[in-house]
Length: 470
Ligand SMILES: [Zn+2]
Image (cartoon, rainbow, N blue to C red; front, side, top):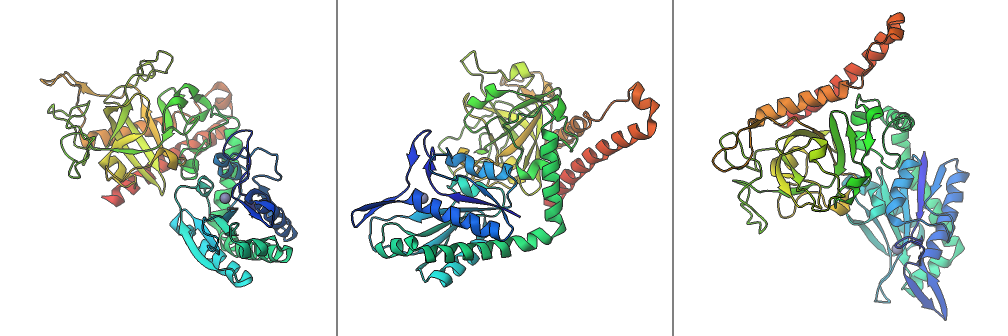
């Protein structure tokens, strides 16, 4: 077990080179800073955890190490932590507001947050403020159980005096450790957890020898399915950092392969086309840039389509057309919980944004398809939706009366073709027979046999997942 301890605020937390003190409070002429108290608690917590044989990763160890808030969760993931505990103090304009609360992001983490809250209240006698779900906190995006403990109110005299008491501090750190150990134990003992951790390390090691950008990390949901051991030919990948200018892209996720492009991004809901505007969206357009076989706009309620940014007037921006990508090309999207979706590039969007798709595509990916409140926002990634798009896979008919490009694909053919393209793409990494391997047939067979069924299995899994949802 390895636990990330995150003492809130500190150097470069919110802006580079600037110390972020967090909340401040003057008590009897002395100024107290949240960042100092959280660091004191963090360092004691580290010692308690280590004394019990638990590995610790500190997001910051002192007041001078730069620790931007947006990188803390990712750094803990790369350090292979299984649990993330962030320490903060609350603040209020009202001097009477007091008590302890525990914040979490994902519903499955709520029981852990509740256990932490209840144990700390029992140990300290602070006022219970319960647990709260928060989607806006970067540190809670850690991919594993993550909680943020608001230890008490810096603005409340009684809370502050309690928190400054070294006895209270050690009791709280012992309690946090107890609950963290209980939380980690079942997961630690379970075989799937161990397998996942082992493969994560293996994947990280494998990634080091591939063309994957060293600054990009596959989200947890994609590590087995699309990692270097999956058949995706990462050794042939070329990162295109010029794509990072798009709003909504996960930085450094854009990669070009010989037969596909790969990127991870937000997922806004597009309801343009003939249907899908029951909610009266003011941004609704009744046309899509691609038309169907009958020269009608696509229906966002039924056609799984994704959106291609319009060409940028800035000539220094990478051009999708130069990558062989145009309307009508096919792709496959992946998201959490084993969700995937075959999709067609069916509409064009703003030239500076990436990551938009139809209501049907969202539905298949397990994303709220409501055009007004659904989707995954740019501040909610990573993890985003992984897109694998196949250049020159479009099957266009001659233009009809509308003058718009027209696809020959139906919903069925786009799905079959996209999944077949994905299958080919994942098998393209399999080693081709060479004279050396011919001389050692047993070894060659094992290598090829190892890669191919894996890719096929992944595609089958994706197909099964789709079939189940129907
Ligand atoms: Zn804070």
